[in-house]
Image (cartoon, rainbow, N blue to C red; front, side):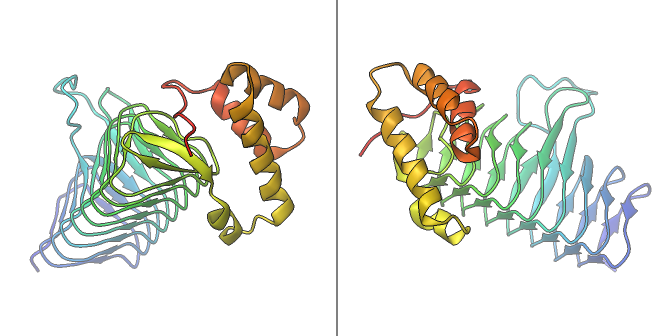
Length: 256
């Protein structure tokens, strides 16, 4: 037996821990997790059930934020059914008691990185070599393609699709495709929405709302308030309007 499981670690039923894995004393694993060889789970990390960790994934390591204070206890919380491919890293939060959170059924491809205090939804793909700085929020069903960097505090909306080799410096609206260096919003993610079960009338309403926002003579915030007021019963348009209202970094430019 070459795996090291420190005293105090909690391992659920039907877990498989491969050779040369290292599980720290404060790690808690739910049922049915699969660790291939050379996986490191450390720090105060809690993972649900049915997750899969490929070789050299390193989960729960101390934040790389220079503001970290020695002695602080920060956390990583992981839900169910996630896949962490080779050399993926997930850092714990920075402040004492804070948490980096990952929900359910996400795919973190090889050499991807989730920085401290990130808040990751469900059904997200983070491409090979893509990196999330601290405090990034990604909403459900978004995709970040390979070799893309997302700077701190940026938020990616639901069903957003980010191109490869991008630098994302501003928030990306829900349902949109963004591309560039820095990324700009290009077009509605029509194909992606179709694949997720959106019907044609629903997609057309989103497209119409985006034309309204991009052509409005008012500020984006004012246009979003008007959109919310006139379409409060439309869940998708309300999502866009509320996303704009809650933006901390500003919304990426709308290009062509």
